[in-house]
Image (cartoon, rainbow, N blue to C red; front, side, top):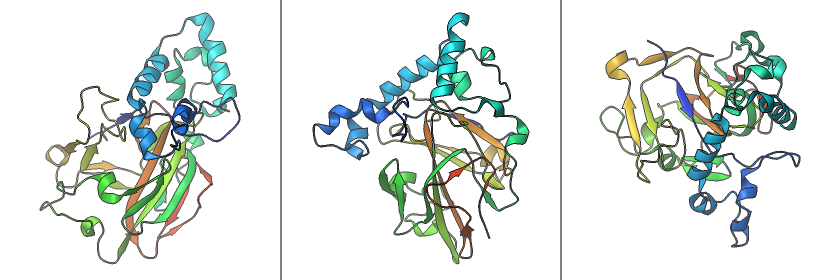
Length: 283
């Protein structure tokens, strides 16, 4: 059975860098006059993020006239330091829209998959990594979340278990790794280890893992579950390490949450850049 592919759309997060970089938080500057910081939850609640996301989706999907697309895409490549030498198609004339360039596939040999137990699922910069302490995820787009608010209730688990203790087995710990993808990064993501996909949960109201690509018909606070057990069997859909899982259509953040034995150790640190297939840690 094929691995279910995801196409996600998110608002551009705050990006450090030179003046030419497109920073969504600049759009939110009026909120600062009201005493709100660009990374606060209040800003993201009040800002028209869904509208901005849809507008960006329209712009990136526009089929550009031939005389315009090459200079415009060349400007994007220059502004965000896109490494076109790694792209499967290096000729900018082959891309009909900005969205196609954003989702560009790479040459298969430029992202070798390490033999370690856990590898990076995406290209980007590590914002935070380490053990999950006090059942909280640290610094996801500048905001700290509880596991329950981030993942929702565990009513999808066998037996409908409640509380957070069933998230990991005895003798194991929960670990997290948050990776930010800049506009110039490769925006497809891959399986970080050998595992099976059994369940999917979609939170449309928060624009997190927006599997319906920012559908206007949603109710704030609700989520949508889908189980793969009926179609794939009790083990779920196999996702080999390094296998392609999906793509982003806008600047994005990946939150990798997993359980591991106490002896698990990370091979990188916060602030470091990583690429698909690069070792994150091993037993």
